[in-house]
Length: 91
Length: 321
Length: 97
Image (tube, rainbow over all chains, first blue to last red; front, side, top):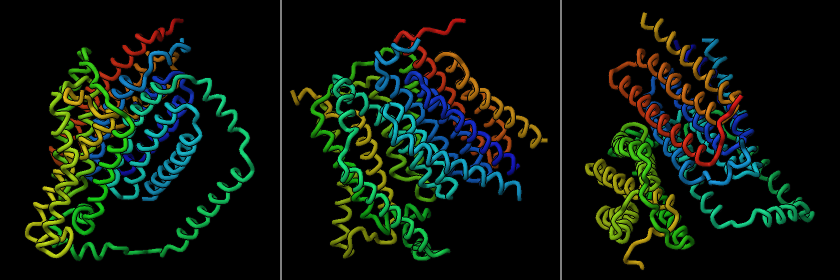
């Protein structure tokens, strides 16, 4: 089982690296934000896999904090950083 | 066993590569919003690095502050920056002017960088292979610390004054923001039902998790900074959904909570100085609850300070008008 | 037997993460990418957590896992709505063939 956890964590990290393309490419700010949201969920999954592999409860707490704060970041994006003009050039 | 080591090695290698790449992208990005998203991703990966270095305490702090609240704080800063920056045209002109720096301003940073790299390289290479560091000292004194988590023992007992000064730094950060930002009005109450219901569920959970992290800090990773930033996130969410705060609470009660952490710290330090003969030298029997008291006050202050930093200016109150 | 189901669930979860990432990279506009993202959020993480919860050493550990999933579900659904609504208000047009 240990091997499966680590392999899946590696697989998810590769996924995350691939998602970087969307952050860099955009085109809109919301597209970049979506990628960041996916990174957040992926990191939660990686943390939980590593927690199970290491038998560590503290890492599950870290995953819990990740899950909670990712939502706050996303709401801050929608309410603050997403200006009304920025998406005009994107169809 | 072999295959696991290979998988872990690949994981670490990819992690380090991504981290360096992200660091470079953050520094070189022209688009500020892109830089923020990249920095949040950097924080996520940094937390994973701390996990791999077997430092769950720092991983938890990085999850709460680096990947969590920093993103929201930076976005609020970007929002205010967009509000005060009227014309992108002038910015383009100045950046075009900056294309031709003088020779010394090109060479000097390079020299400084090379010196830093050499110094860091020397420091790294001259490290002893296996070092106990302060671990034996901490282990020896754990029984007297009043807690079971060595990290909490160091932060709140053995080197409590570090944490005291960190509290003061946070307070200073807020004071400098307040001295810059002027007075801001609370945003109007939000009418979006989905955001409101998200708030209704998430805010109590955030407060509960904050209490849990505070309590668990005595014998497992957790503590005031992690708990405080989760509490601050609850404040940020409430502010974003147009939280209605009584005007009179914004004046003295808010300021009281902001200085509570540093204040309790200083009072306890002063009392112990005269009764025990040293700053923050807790009597062994009382160490446990004194640390809990300090951490509770610090959590409230950190939460309030971070939410106030997110808000950005002195909250408007009727008395101020 | 438990191990078998656990492995099955974990692999299925990883597949949804892959699908979410591919969707995020390949789909033509914000709304379809949002759709791909929420699959990874809800189903991918859900299956992973189900697989891990089967292996959890205590009921409270499994409970914490399920709590994390519940929070991600709630936050994911709300944020997806907020972003889609925000994009519509800002005049981002849905993709048409």
